[in-house]
Length: 226
Image (cartoon, rainbow, N blue to C red; front, side):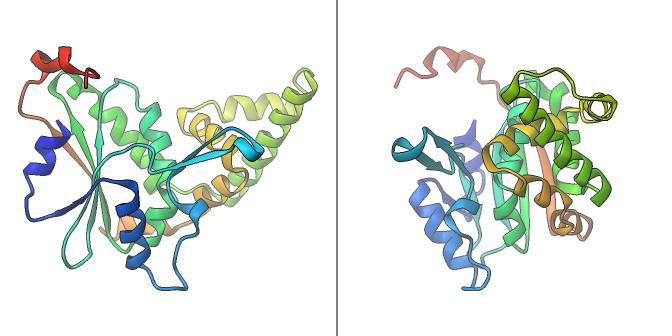
């Protein structure tokens, strides 16, 4: 499915290996705007000396044109729920913020076409809707208090915590919490930023939803046999 999407645009340069992506995006920004290693999409495993970092862990092609813009980030929909897609967007938020123009292209197999709306809602949450400062402040408190209670095995501390738990029960905040456990408060600072919502409003940040025209179920027995 991903191969078909790549072959459909032969004039676009498609980046596959992690090293190619790192070199390409380092060349796209000047020294002042260059991303640090911990701002690239990544997953960390282990602790201390055993810590391993995988950059661009989704292993999905990224398309670029000779002029350098816009950049196309492919995402293949494989589940009805967009929980993994939300994590993908949060991982890529710093990179998207550093780019002038970008497109997230959802590749939707026909059996999952009804899920496209949920994915569009997830994109709106993380790309087009900023957290207001008062909400971000309360969310920061809630995450820290939630962690304190988990560490001490204590019960819900007070009415404020219980109300915050109800307020922040939506999927957007669940995704932010999972990312916060990895990266800390910077996750909330990014959600409070206006950079991505401004890009969406000005048409420089876009979400495309492409329902794949071919059937692929007859190839399912070949998955993960290589």
